[in-house]
Length: 598
Image 1 (cartoon, rainbow, N blue to C red):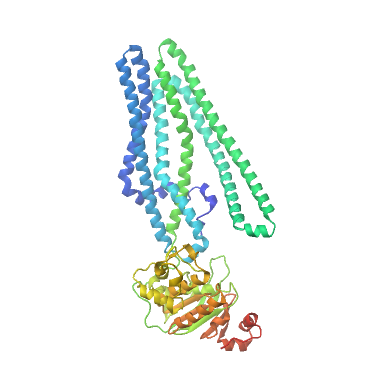
Image 2 (image 1 turned 180 degrees about the vertical axis):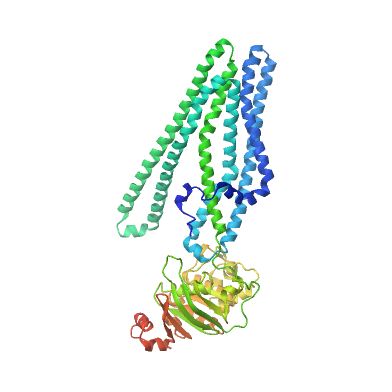
């Protein structure tokens, strides 16, 4: 799968034609086409104003001053000032309009991206971790925003300015113009490799800075450990080494940059000198006016910047198109777990059993099989427990039951109906999930219990907490249901977070309760509370429980030992102990010679 957050991808060219890619953005630009056209008109108007300035200046020098007409000098000077002010105002308005267009396009694009990402299966996020994915998307959308605002307008402006300047200079005096072109045009060609070299150098600077930031963040978090183990000297040495490397790269980049721009400044002065030398004979003979020479000087000043920036703007467009292609690849990514053909169906009611039928699954085509021919039946009202070594496939079974991934071979069926034929919402409406890693949102306790479902009554929320003997959270969290929860539940203990997690599942009143290592991250006292609450919640409900702590699943209807992706053993607690196999050894490791009360 394409790695959307590849840090080196910013230098890659689009793999599809630029025109086809730009056509993909037409629906986003279409609502703003009139505003975009108006922004282009304003830009061309502003360029015309800039190009008109030197012409007015020539008229002042060649006509008004020799004629000694004070009124004409004032009129032309006022016209020059007016052109300048109007040009500035028009340019300001054009920038505002273009920026609004870019922001509106990116807003629509981000909304569509977010909506689409919410539909993708877990396989996508395994390949593209959410944090880096969002950072990459943010960077790419920013470049797309600039493409439809600053970058596209800069390309048009530079092209129009260079073309307009060259035409006016050539028509004014081809002799002088050709000599100026002999200097300025090669400048544009030289700038291409130089700017490419400078981009590479600055990229190394950014990488070096990112390395310093990463090392600093790591060491700051681990200051107590470094101090206790006497490793602060190592941290300082590593930071000094990285800082020295950054300093060298920054100095190299600065030397290149200042040398290049100083060189351009020298060439601009050289071009002015060429104008003065080339124009002198004409001025002496009366063929060329002084105003024309001054006009050439003014146009030359307007020529170097756009020529140099033209190549840089083309590079920015190339990078924006590469970013746009990555965004479109996300939008083109199809979920591996689409809705089934029974879209309007609800959760099957009544139902009697769920069957795993010869299920095979792997996380990618290159990976080893995570599950190999797994088959078992989960009957209504039963509690099935999955145990085994870490990485054996227990959580994978849970993920497949939740339809986070697509089964490669075999199927999971409820009363003979493939669960993939049901709509995702219908299937998941009957499932309650409690994971080892608790996902809490910044907001209120109520919002976390209901996962922002405002139709759930406060009474039901309070009852859900009391069912699992966690009613004291209403007193311990200031504000009760309206109490504030930090992102990730940082202001709560691990036990409190897990209790909220379980209460959230209970509040859903699920047909099937799925607990994946629900008690593995809590203290023994909280574990006992959770286990008591779980026993109450499981009454009259089907449950699939993944557990490392065997004491929590002694009374399960059936215990299935998963090892290396296969069903290695199955039976009740007593039956598996008597077989003296894998389960018996796991029991012995946890409890020695003692026996769990049955």
